[in-house]
Length: 196
Image (cartoon, rainbow, N blue to C red; front, side):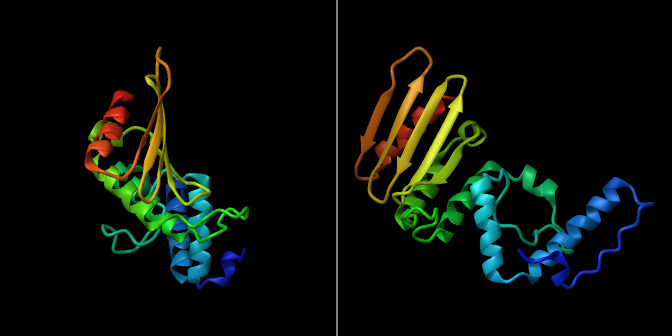
């Protein structure tokens, strides 16, 4: 990992400044360093954020509402869920074959496209739940949701998808569909809705 001192930034932090002022200067320094980084290092940062399951958009960069390009953590935290999940899914395109060093397949473009289509069909109450998106070793996209009402685990592939649903007091249900069609997508959306 390269040291921050390599980048053309000049930190001027003073002990007399309050925590807020120090934090604002730290954010500015981080953004300046990020903007100067090699694209391969940026890719590694994105991969690390993906593996850590960041809560905000994975793609760090200049914020539209901030002309000074400061690293605005408040924006990341308050970013709407649609943007968050879309960004997570889009970031899976960065995962090349063997991304887990154990022979995993690259995430299939159609699986990502289907995940994005699903996200755009989700109602507010599902979007605001804590959906967990991830890549699978077979090149699919996984989706998990756990609430007090139950659990759902789905795998979305290039032409098909399947999911398990366990609701309180009931047996597990397994659903598998091929091809990816509107009626089946709506059934998955309804199942997610049952958990929120």
